[in-house]
Amino acid sequence: MPVDVQRFAAANLLRRPEPVRIGGFVAGFDPTTTSPYVNYATPLPGTAPTDTEVAALVGAFRERGLLPRLEFAPDAAPEVEPALRRAGFATEAVHEYLVCTPATLTRPTGLPETETPCSDAEFAEIDAALSEAFGGEFPASAEGAARLRRTQERGGAVRFVRADDGSCAGAASCSAPAGGTAELAGVGTRPAHRGRGVAAAVTWALAGAMFGQGSESVWLEYGGDGSRRVYERVGFRPGGTRLYLRLAGPLP
Image (cartoon, rainbow, N blue to C red):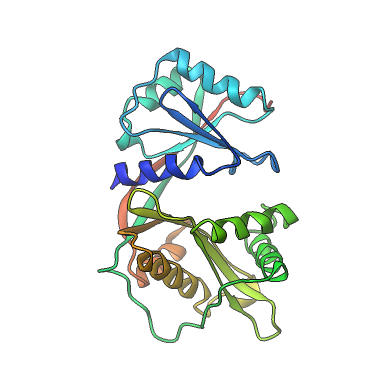
């Protein structure tokens, strides 16, 4: 599974507005934002980078005024981490990921119905809801709403639960499949609507949508034991570990 996840990560970054290949790395840049969580790099499976290639990768970030940062499954490219640490990269985080397959996907009883956004207003409302769900860490913006629309238009999916007042109670998105798998991300529920199955509903709906497109698996990262239990309810199981590294020192 780590190799599948890593193949997906590289293919997904090539979908960015400005993808760059440097040696065995793929960097995905989006000129509409400087967020390090959108602009980052990942290695191809099995890559054994030279110090020169790592320096060139750092240069690609520096010339854009961005923080050099990578996300990857270390088991799929074991020689990458030592090369990055020689260049001064430090650990930002280590996340476990969970995997769901058509055989394990389960719909718990009592989940709210989900919807697929169609209008600009719905995408904007979803972006605002997710911003609130994550405590404003990712401010709502026209660019954020546009990225959600692009995800759906390019073969991925977005699902949301509508609140009684017509607003968005919670939502999530899933990137288009690549290499037989797809990443489900950004599962968020507004505080006033938590504990009502919203996260489980959108997760179940998105995984099912990807399986309907022929994906063999869907994977996601979780943020704590509470969210892990939500995902396990709909059929996600432990898959492996992803490593987040960023260049130590002051921001560019």
